[in-house]
Length: 215
Image (cartoon, rainbow, N blue to C red; front, side, top):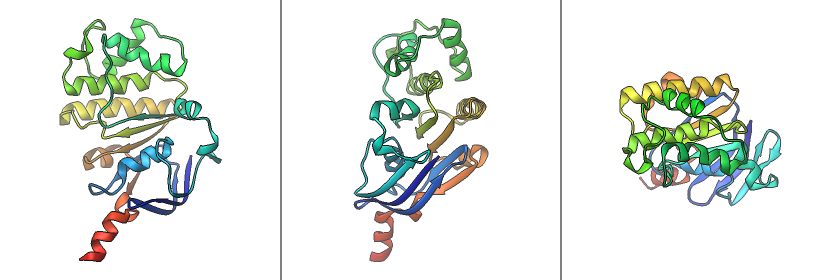
């Protein structure tokens, strides 16, 4: 789906050629290797100094940002949780993307997928960090127009058991609905268990190569 050619991000990345076409891709690497940067490049939140990034054969800079981000949805490492209830937080993604609201039954189904047994009227501010993360993951699952999910450390606030349940459900549904998932994770168990392809950003990191040269 994605093709990166001669992409340079000053002092961060240098990618001669990289194709991202597998269904589930895990991005790994040392701290500072540019893992989060590559997600932001794919979503056109960051601009490379040079080079081109194509999505389905079309340069992403030629796609209107609002349209691009309806198709390529990013979940940041610290996802935003809005004031209001769990229901409000699940529906707000649909509202931002111009999609129709869904029924409470559908929202409850998504919460069940996320192993989150909470009432829809629960205040989001009362949730723990891991519960907020699961609500944010559920929010993007509802987006029918999404074609790609970009996940930055999606299990950072989850324990091992919950991580296994949530990621298994999320990735099963993503694959079933023919949506690509590209995830940054420090958890090798997630990569080994779920990913079709693992990419190590150390190979493309300018900062890490610079450190090696200085040794």
